[in-house]
Image (cartoon, rainbow, N blue to C red):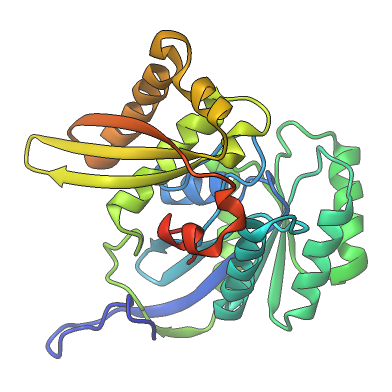
Length: 308
């Protein structure tokens, strides 16, 4: 049991049922975080159309009367090109080590490639129960879906397979039933009311970065880290101050924008998500700081709370 798991009081009637950790494994942009948000019916994980939106481990707890599924979201499987990438690969390895079950999530709208091979081989070598979810069936052709299914089947064999659209929660019950059936039986590891073990300010940092990803182009968003400087909460409002760390001076100018237009838009978009998270008015202040080549320095990556 980890330090964050909940220990019941001696007098409590602690629930039990189908319980276990489920690692969400897939290449970048397969919809892992979207699926997590859909099953939890809340915007917990940052999502965007850009690759490597997820940088750190995120736990999402789905409880009902008879089961507790502990989803572990992790970065997309990729070939490491810098120290940050290496840290994300380490996060994937820790998530797989903790998992009772691996849920491979595949995107059939893109032809199987090197990253899909990495995903399938990593799942096969883990020695754990694996389930395959073919995602994005709402926009993929039947031929694309079948091609992806055959590709993974060639590595994983006859593992259970489900066809879903993470953006459509109504497609997910059969997958969730398959996951529950494959999990071991035991006591719940968290209070049934728990949604995650991630603190609110860390979720907030990711939601701010989601706004960055959605508004900025090409490589710039991937060179940005969000650090929460202060988080002051009371009954009426939440006052947040955050720093956007960029790698180059020219990137700082782009993030700020002409007459401050871009950073103003980032603040507006981030506040929309933060209000939903906090459930109250949010006052957000954003600053931009140049931290040269921070993705190549493990100490800075740790300072930005990206090692999980």
